[in-house]
Image 1 (cartoon, rainbow, N blue to C red):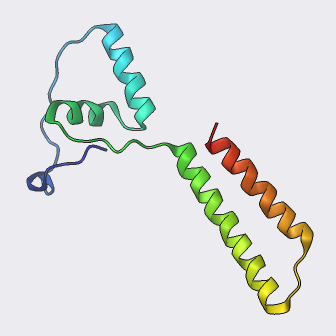
Image 2 (cartoon, rainbow, N blue to C red; image 1 turned 60 degrees about the vertical axis):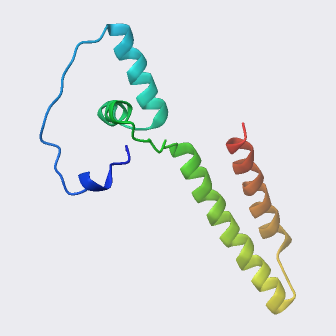
Length: 108
């Protein structure tokens, strides 16, 4: 969503603004909004008022969440190895395989 100015924080969006554009312009705006992961209204508001849009990438967010979960698993394995001085090699192999898969998807 577009970042609002500090003075706009409490205001409710209650005023409509409309204007005419060509079908190809509309298609381009729809593509840009989809690529940024925001609604078309937020994209237009940001362009008109000079706000910055924080692009959302659900794949990246999901990938980072998966990496975090895998990191937690690796941390638990390391803690277990330090405590008992034993670790299941299969658990470590699985965690490393998952980590490599997620990193490969994120860097494609």
